[in-house]
Each structure stands twice: as structure tokens, then as C-alpha cells.
Length: 147
Image (cartoon, rainbow, N blue to C red):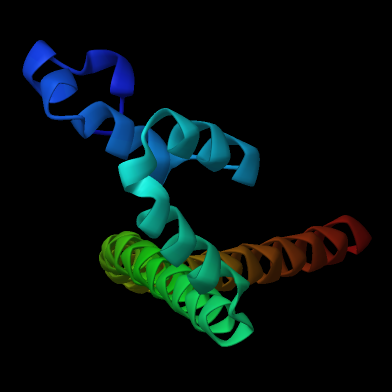
């Protein structure tokens, strides 16, 4: 019984609720009061006292509790790692896909840049030809006016 208030009549009849109170007791005063009510629990209370007063047993209990807490912490860390790993894997796939798209766009832009560079050179050549034609016409006009 973790909750002595929920004890049934049958539990009370066999004293299970008192045993539960004994093992749930937090202080020696509580244990002493429970033992006064039922002297058949004396030997159990003495055993509890001896096990708690023995420093080696207390140290072993503390070590075990530390171990359990450490195992729980490691399990939580593994779950967190697994969760983060899933997120990172998903993000990596997304970034890989975006990287491919960017490479494709880069190829397209490079091709367009070459095309524009070629077109620009063609327009410069045409402009130079027209400038040359204008210069020739101006020169011929000047000769005509001088003659």
C-alpha cells in the first residue's frame, strides 16, 4: 500500500495498513508511535534501526541510489541524443536537397552569365562598328565641306 487512506476493511483486519505506515514512516518518532500501537512490529522496527544505523549499509544504499539516478540520467541523455539525431538527420536531408537546388541554380546563372557576356561583347562590337562608320562619315563630310 502506498496510500494507507485507501486501505480496505480486509487490509485493516490483517494489519496491512499498519505495516504500510511502518515502512512509510519518515522519522523515528513515527516508528515508535506505530510500534507502541502494535508491539508485534518491535523486531521489524529494531531491524530497520540497525540497518539504518550501520554506516556500511547506509553507504551501500547511497551508492545504489546514485547508480540508479546515474542510469536514469544516462537513459534520458540517450533518448535526447536519439531525438536530436533524428532532427539533425532530417535537417541534413533538407540541406542536401537545398544544396542540390543551389548548385542547379548556380549552373543556370553561370550559363546565363556567359550568354549575357557574349551578347554584351556582340553589342560592343556593333557599337564599335557604328562608331567607326560615323567617324568615316564625319571625315568624308569634312572633306566635302573643305572642297
